[in-house]
Image 1 (cartoon, rainbow, N blue to C red):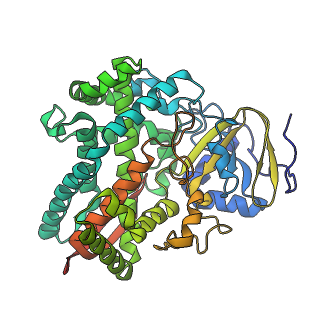
Image 2: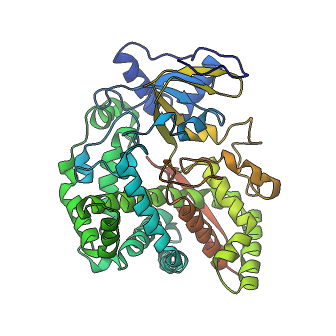
Image 3: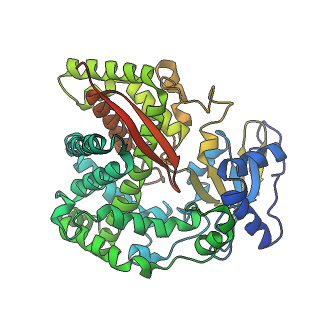
Amino acid sequence: MFPPQSAVPLKPIPGSYGLPFFGAIKDRLDYFYNQGKDEFFSSRVEKYQSTVIKTNMPPGPFIAQNPKVIAVLDAISFPILFDTSKIEKFNVLDGTYLPSLSFTGGYRVCAYLDPSEPNHTSLKSFFMSVLASKHKDFVPLFRTCLSQMFIDIEDEMGSKRTANFNDSSDAMSFNFVFRLFCEKDPSETKLGSEGPAIVDKWVGLQLAPLATIGFPKFLKHFEDLLMHTFPIPFFLVRSDYNKLYDAFYASSSSVLDKAESFGIDRDEACHNLVFVAGFNAYGGMKAWFPTLIKWVGKAGEKLHSQLANEIRTVVKEEGGVTFQALEKMTLTKSVVFEALRIEPGVPFQYGKAKEDIVINSHDAAYEIKKGEMIFGYQPFATKDPKIFDNPEEFVGHRFVGEGENLLKYVYWSNGRETEDPTVGNKQCPGKDLVVLLSRLLVVELFLRYDTFTVETAVLPFGSSVTLTSLIKATST
């Protein structure tokens, strides 16, 4: 039975799933090749005059058993996905399909669990405890890793006149994550310098059904068959994953000891640790840090000057880069939140209705039946023109002063920016750490340099960023 109607009119959900099997194939080809993600959704919003629609989501046949979703594409309807009293999060991390559990040691890791499952409470409590115990290491360790990254970038700029930010950022990010959890440099393990490449391959095979790799258009059907039609087998990365697992198992004994105090078996804890460190943390940084630098770089010299002035002034007043100093950098904080708003690192959210529910958009209410899959395309929610002025424009000061009231519409962490992760929700346990590291990246950048320019390109996940100029700081 559906709940009582809301103040806005109740309407049937528009859209179409098309013919069985063929409708899903057509939508998949439109999504990846004929239209692209944004046009796929915007054309349907325009056609049906609704931001809540029925459609199919990739990968569809034969990887996903049921590709049908109800898409929520505005800032008001999207947060239903955060309400774990109404939405089930069982095996929906990657949407309508679940990669082989061989990729995670045979375990359903924490990211695949619904908060109602007892193991979710144990695992998320464990990771939140680990992060809390590492709190004092965040700033000094990340600054150390950033220092090496900037040395590498300057060396490349010196020899080539440009620098690939992604490569240096990837190496820095993996180094930071491994050292944070394992308290040693990955080069001291059997991984050597292979860590980023191994994780890239392991994550890439799991997410391949959600991506394209840029084959020429005349090969689109071949690529579609190769990547979106049949599950990618684990054996292609088995030896690499075992090397990754062994490195973490051998180097994170204190973390695994803590897991046992939460009643978690060491083997299960280590597979979860590899997933959190590799898929969530490093994988997130791999996509997110270049995105942040892209938007800051494209914002231009005026914003760069304002950021440099704020950062250098506060650091001088506070006597260094401290938590207190970072909190006083209002423009820097706003710039990070604006980048998270305009291009969130994880654009998709999924969940199944636990019961018959009614959801609201700005101007209508819609009934969703128990068991139906709800899909949110976050960039449309966080660029909702009824919430944000000039939503497609990067506005560095958007969240300064009264603008802070808009933070409740920033959803990148699988929750509102104004809310906190708990064992009872699916919000990212590292939410505050991601914001902290993003601010530190901007701070260290403008302590060293006055301005910089970039060239960018689209990758299957995130952006490729090439630094084309880097002007060293002329004042402190």
